[in-house]
Image (cartoon, rainbow, N blue to C red; front, top):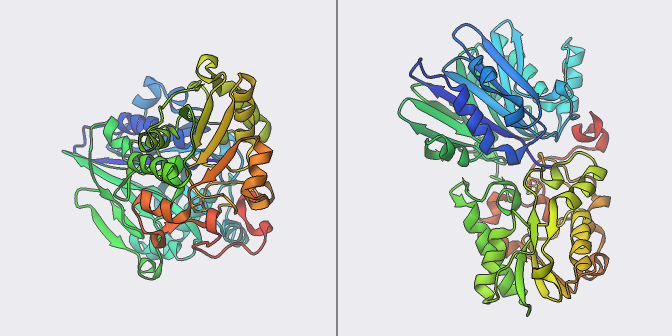
Length: 466
Ligand code: SF4
């Protein structure tokens, strides 16, 4: 399973405040959403300056690079390649010059029909320098803006042509526009303090730079982030069903984030408690697969009265396994990143709490590690329903053939992984834990009810094609 990107945008009404350092720290706090590349664009009073490169935020930027990005308005991006290859041409923000001026864009999400849109534009003479859907959006916006000369109208017209998920920060000359798709699939929050207004994928970005959380952007909202904060809701949002990604709560987002009024930490604690109620089992200790499952394991322990313990120590200096681009790298990463504590595990019966099972390869490796140090019984408890269908909205889980739960029963998975018991959280319990009606959640990867049209063939889908 691959992660999604993280975006930040910032405007200061005090012209002497340079936003690049704030954006840098905001991106730092979103590093869990993408570790392949990072970039920042700012408007320095005359032109948009962009610096981006492959690597972690701390490696891409140094003091000199940040000082070179002058200006009181800017955007930033951390990337994982859900669409397009992992290479320098695909890093964001995308910068382009056109008749209307300069535009820079950072995107979190995935556009299902970007291959068709790109082909249409290529026929009209557009040249593309990357293989991502974000550049397709950038070209669509510049083309439309030349006609309308009005950015709100431009964004709405372009949005009507996009199928998929998108949270966007767009720098058009010195104007910062912020967009959340009409289904609100990707998170996007607004913060403010004194002269500064900020948007980010997650509220943790505000915490690190001491900005006050204001609100989530509404599904379908277009916001011009200047002194007036002009906002408009796209007409399409009236007819669209909201579909917040449930995986943000289960796994992707940082536990200290609050998304669409629901605390991620709280949701994960409740997930553990619910698992304990619906799938109780006697054991010596409850253990998380670190780090994202820690709150759920604490919840399970509190509800069951069984002690909480740590049996696996995570090496925090390497990336999350699912975010590694190839299968070989992912398998190696599991062995590199999780080290067992033999004294805490040998001869014990453990309840192992994990957030999800996708292919099952990571779980299989972990179970091997635990058995090698002499764990007696392993009871696996999973904080979301079985993943049975791929995601087309920015979380590339590969094909249905590779999803272990799409092709095996719970008992079969239990046998494949070699655990003594296995239980998943059900959809109704998940809804209760997140605190958002399932009518307003995307649950497509666990119930196959996709909130948008799907590509007619894999040929048409950007992730497989480009
Ligand atoms: S299909 Fe799954 S991972 Fe993708 S957006 Fe929907 S809930 Fe999130």
